[in-house]
Length: 578
Image (cartoon, rainbow, N blue to C red):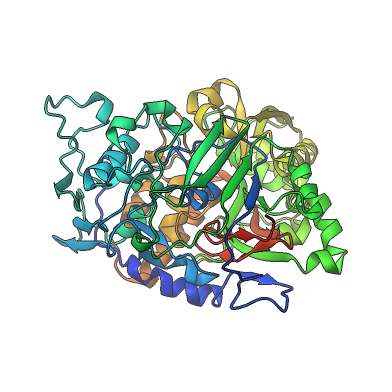
C-alpha cells in the first residue's frame, strides 16, 4: 500500500493555531454551573474512589497496536505512555501536542526525513523494569504487522523506510536487530527514518503504537488480555467481551509524568451493555461515563432537554466527525455510478438526523469535511427538497444505470449501536420509495471493521452494498480526516479497513499533491477538491456532521470536553463517590 507515495514537507505545525481560530477557542458549549472553572466542571484534586465506565459494544482491542476508536485512544493514555500526546486540557487547548514518554517533541533533521526523540529517565513498566528506547521500537515494529493487528492505522507502514520489513514475528535477521528504519543507539534515544519528508511526524508519535511493549511479555494476539502498563493504572482483571478493572500502578511515578494527575483509585469498565441502559444508568447516577463519547441516545436526549436540572449537567460538543454510509462499488449494480447516485438522491437525510436525536445530534451533512476542519467548504451535489430525498431524480438515475425498476442490496451497521440501527431502518424506508430495497444486516461492533464491513471479500460476498459507519479526524486537518477513509492504498485484503470502498486513483494522486503543498491555503483547497471528487463519484452518502449531547453525573469531577478527542478527557476525571 502506498508504496509509490511521494511526500514533501507539509507545514502541519500551523494546524493547532488554525484549529483555535476555526473553533473559536473551543468546540463545546454547556449550560454551565457555578462550579465551572475555565471550562472544567466540578474541579477537584481529591483522590480515591471508583470510576465506572460502560461501553455498548466490545473493545476493538486494548492492545495499542490494534485499536482505532477515538475513545480507545483517549482511554489508552491511562495505562500507556506514547512518545507524544495531546495536552490534557479543555477545548482547543486539547489539540496541542506535548511530549509524554519523550522529553521534548521530535527533533527533525535531513529535511524532516529523520526524527529523533529522547526518552524521559526513570519511566518503568508495572513490574518495575525500566522502559528503554528498544521497547518503543518494538512496539512500533509489531504495529506494522497488519495480519496480526489489522485494526490500527497504517501511518507507520506508509511513511517509514521499511525496506521490505513486515513484522517482528517473521524477522529474517538472525540477530533480530529489527527494523533498520528505527535506530536505538542507546536506551534513551530513538530515531525514525522516513522514506520521504513529513513535518507532521509528531502526530504519528502520539499514536498508541508508540506505547512501549516489553519483548519478553509480548504474546501476540493475546497481548490484549494483559497489556503491560507504563501509565498510572494497570489491569487487575480482564474478562474479554464482558468487563475489565484497573487499579493504580505502583511503579508509575508522578515525577516522570507532568501530564497526568490520576484521581480515582480504581476504574471499572463494563462491555456490551445495552446503549439505552447506559443512558438510564448515567441519569440515575449508577454509572459515571459512557465511554464511546458519542452522546445520549434519542430517548434520553428528550428526557434531559426537557428537565433543566438534568440539562445543567450536559455538554453539547461539536465534533469533527461525520456519520455516513459507504456505497460499495464492489457490489453490483453499485459498480455503476448512476446506481450510486440514485441512492444519494433517494436518501432522506432528515431521517438520518432523527436517528441521532434530531438537531442536537448533529447537522445534516451534504459532503464529507466537517465544519471544524480548517478550510472545510460546504457544498451539495445531490440537493433535494428539505433534504428529504427526491424520488423522481433517483428513478432517473436508476434508468441511466439500467435498473429502471430498482434493485436490491444489503446495508450493514454495528449491532450494539441503536442510532445506526435506526439509520439503517430509515434508509430502508426512504430508498424503497425509489425501488431500492435494502436488507439490514447487523454485525458486532468489536469486529465490524476487522471481519465484516472492513474486510473487502466479506463485504462483497455478502452483498453489503451500503455500510453504515462514522469517522472522526485522527487529528484536526484535511489529511487527518480524509486519508484513512478515501485513500485506496490503505485498503487491506486482510480487513481492519476504515476506507470501506473509496477506490479512485485520481483521489490518491490528489492526496499526494496535498502532501507536497507547503502553502496552507493551497493545501486546504486540495482537501476540499478531494471532498468534491469523492462526492461526484458517489462513493459516500454523508449523513450528519456530529454533535454529541454528553451527560456528566453530579459526582463526576474534573469533567471537560477536549478537542483532541472531542469527548470528555479520560485522563482528568475523578469521582466524589468512595
